[in-house]
Length: 400
Image (cartoon, rainbow, N blue to C red; front, side, top):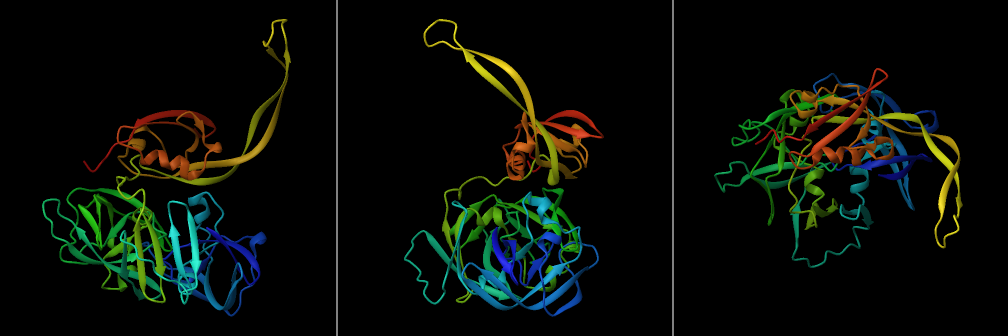
């Protein structure tokens, strides 16, 4: 996430290569921004629901550091239900993709969590034996690459596919059923919630494939999702597209986007060989606003008992301080999952996880517990209707 000023107003953006025209959303009175040349439109995106209302605006000025972009277009989403801030646990006002990527060579180092921007006219590619540079195809301001997938564990056949590079997607891979003669519904899968699109929730089948082949790199046993056809009807308008590559793959590399020369480079990172995992708990957790937490302080004084270098501590007084801290609740729960079978419910507010108060943790720290190895024990204390309940369950791989 990084700051960009839109017509002089500072806002927080996520860089997402899967976005063409810039999106704004979740604005309040403190985040107000003046927009130019506005008209109401309807937007259709991922999800099976109706198009949503938005405002299309052009002729805006984006300022990023000492860089200024004039005549920029954007969509302001009017639907309050599209709220990435609650999903991520951080304040996000917008998503930007093409409008940044088209003007720079963008180097994303997932290991160091650093993004570098370079002038494409001065950028020089270094000789790198551990790198792979592949042609990019831009279609409606979005980047696609031709890669290969090994679908059958009993075969070495590589199926050629065209995939969107979607850095904003959390999954490893999406494949669209029947978009290629070899891409058929998986034999081993379970139904899962895959995320939220502009037009509602996206559901589908979650599974594994044998391998993903990107040039000379081969990633073994990546997770893959097959979204329901009705959720991706908009995405299927590009008939050559077979799916997407998401962040769970990209984070295993250092990635360089070069839109001007229509290239993308991959350099193997330290996490390249880590096994692909998915959320085995079945819980989708979101930010639930702030809660007032009472924390105990106490004053103390040390008293000696006459023996050298020995001190006893006597507590003289207790006092308390009140602090606003984050709260998290269960937004979605996969039917048949370990958490579902344990008795947890949608709407439960998670107070503790594995004996740690969740208000002292970031959202990604909490969710990271659900991506551990099979048979990892998860202990949760939740608040439901003013009462606290404790639940225990073990992560289970539903794809074995």
